[in-house]
Length: 97
Image 1 (tube, rainbow, N blue to C red):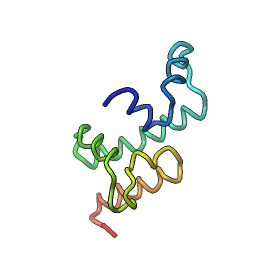
Image 2 (cartoon, rainbow, N blue to C red):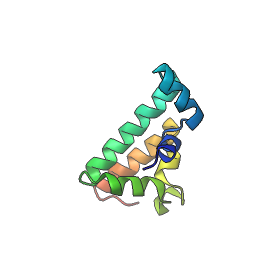
Image 3 (spheres, one colour):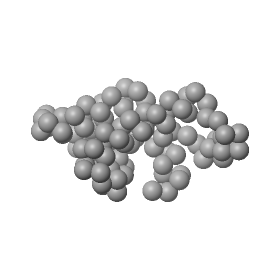
């Protein structure tokens, strides 16, 4: 995955990332976004048997059970991330409604 695509999923602008790279610190909001992304990605990787390429594809493609939005577009907020985590859990246990 390209850096700009990853930063977009995390919710950090490329210009801000360049500044943070120099300073070595993220803001608290950026840190929250990163932790949220890691939490969702980790659950998705476990669900998909460790296939990170499949997870990346799943994060960026629109999902029918998410009203056509991609899971990655929803994880920029805590509410959206919870929705995605619920989808992962429902999928893990075979509940598709």
